[in-house]
Structures are given as C-alpha cells and as structure tokens.
Length: 216
Image 1 (spheres, rainbow, N blue to C red):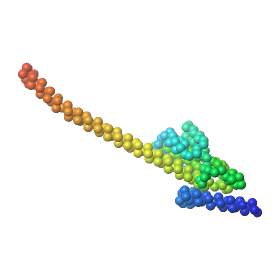
Image 2 (cartoon, helix red, strand yellow; image 1 turned 180 degrees about the horizontal axis):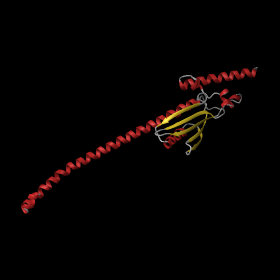
Image 3 (cartoon, one colour; image 1 turned 60 degrees about the vertical axis):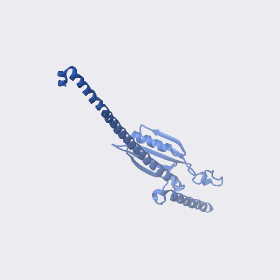
Image 4 (tube, rainbow, N blue to C red; image 1 turned 90 degrees about the horizontal axis):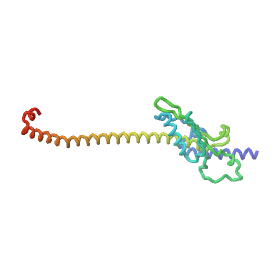
C-alpha cells in the first residue's frame, strides 16, 4: 500500500514536470509534443552526399554529443547525446532511487534517401532505452526539443547556402558588367588615337605617294 502510494506520487510528479517543461518548449500540448519519441521528415534541395554532410554537421554541433556513428555508403547516422537536467547539473540524491534509474542518454537516428532533384531526410529522436520506459519515465520534452532544433537548423543551413549562392551570382554578374564597362572605356580611349594615326599616315602618303593615298 505504502509503496504503491509512493509510486503514484512519483508518477504524478513526473507527469506534472513533463507537462510543464513541454509547455515551456512547445507552447502547446498535444499527443505529438508530449511524446517521448519523435519522427521528422525533411526535404532538402540538395544531392544526397551534400545533404548527408550537412546533416552530420548539424547533429555533430549539438550539445553533449558523446558518440557519433556514420555510414557514408548507406547514408545513415546515429548519435548518442547525454541528457541534461533542465533545472541543474547536480547529481540526484542518494535517497531518490527513481532519479538514479532515470534514462541518462537520448538517441538520434537519421537516414538520407536520395531523390531526383532533392534528398529526403528521416530523423528519429528517442530515449536511449526500450519502448517500455515510456510507461514509467518521461523525458521532460528533451527529445521534442532536439527534433525542433535539428529540423530548424537544417532549414536554416539550406537558407544560408541559398543566400550565399545568390550573393555569389550577384557578385559574378557585377564583376562581368564591370569588365564590360572597362573594355568599352578602353575602346573609347583607343579609337581616337587610331583615327588620328590613320589620318596622319594618309597625309604623309598624299605627299609621298598620291596614287597609294587615293587607294586608301
């Protein structure tokens, strides 16, 4: 009886903490935001190798990544992230055995699927434990937070790359126009000198060789 009551109190406390944390992160509550496990599908306007390199860069830059496994041949990636206490880094009390049993890591699994002109990235964010833990332990929104962070980072990186490409194209066009303007200026400077030299030569020929001057 007492053990069951203590377990119910713990479960209720965990649920309240989970809901409060998810509300702060997502600003809404539904079955998707409250879940421990999340799936995301992101379409990138990149070839498969470029998309995989971008994915590896984004996940590798996440905080507390302890292990990163990659397979270029199959375009798959798996990362293990140490889970942080959102309210502090202090170790749990020795009198709190349930806290010591808490899941210590999250897992991120990703795969790039090549397409004709784009690549599709499938991402999974979940606790580093079996599905049974979802019945007892909640992640306080940490995997939802990871899912949002990675998808937004991927979109931001692609947008930045597109901006850089447009800026490069604009610089190239400006340099091309500048080169044409310089060439036109050079022609404008050369043509009067050419005309002056031609007239001078004609004048000399008129005096020395009238027949050849008439032919010119």
